[in-house]
Image 1 (cartoon, helix red, strand yellow):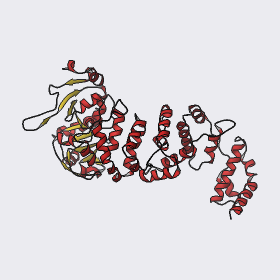
Image 2 (spheres, rainbow, N blue to C red):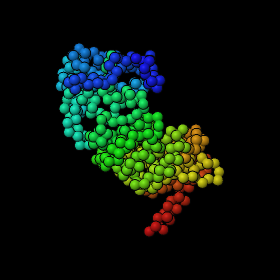
Image 3 (cartoon, helix red, strand yellow):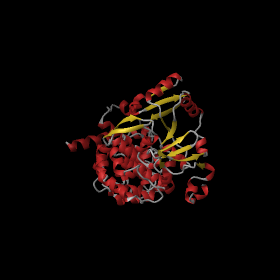
Image 4 (cartoon, rainbow, N blue to C red):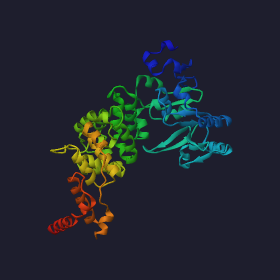
Length: 455
């Protein structure tokens, strides 16, 4: 049987790691029951899964007579010789049966929020949490959420999943169960929806972004999408408007730091996704492509790459309102957009970036990271290394010193402190606290004069 496999397949699934059953193609019985394609997995990554906690979980289900298999992404990763980051389990047991079983076994259960969708989280040996989900059918979907019914049919559960490569199950004996040609698609590095693409997308519109994320992980060509898939996405892209910004950002971040980020983002824009991500109608793709290409060896943060699509502070804030970035991420994008242009300097090119560290509001550690991201954006590896190696001097004046001299907290306080930092920076960090505080009357006079002119 192995002799008939293509060389490409054997590169992905070496002979030492697999044994194929005689049931090598998914077929249907006269009654319509689909027999899955199966193969046997026996790789180092698979054997490494069996920690004492996994073995205990498997034994519990075996003792109580319920089927348990690994589901989804972990199976895909194992077939690609990658160690899964986490394990998701599927079972024929209902949530109530699992709860009764775990209670009998003295296993603590945590996070009960997933029970209505069939997920029970068990903490084994008070060390590792495992999510186990009952096989289910999506009865009603609204493009964001689904009402489910439980089943014991593995094919029915596989049929509700998004992509063929994510619709695989793995028995704990190493048997891979494939109802929808996921193994074949992995061999071809093909990313395809289970069944009809438009139907799968309408069940959960976030699958549009998930498709592109997994394309970056699996495909070998940057833009070899199947036309019918692109058509289904284009016709349903409006559904992204009902997806929360947080969920969109989780997926978009992974696309931005994945393979083919430049091509995939351009394709998303071409399909009309931009407005639903809070991006301008015509994002700056020219700048984005340049930044992706020149900075890829420096591994910029996804928010740094996102900044390349935006031209103004208003565009940043509009995007943030949609995607709900963290405060750190929002401020990073604003910082990059503001400071990404060339810093004119007659002397040491590092000086303007050193100055930014002391003149930018924010935690020093955060500002240091933001400056590094600007240098990555500019692909200035030499300056980035110098900035990282710079031993940052400690500003000798603190707030208490100003309070002791009669200043009160407020805008004026911050202005005075900022001007002291400017003087200290211009002295090449040489001035002491006493020398700086001697300049305090002069600075206060400047601040008062500036305020008088404004009024």
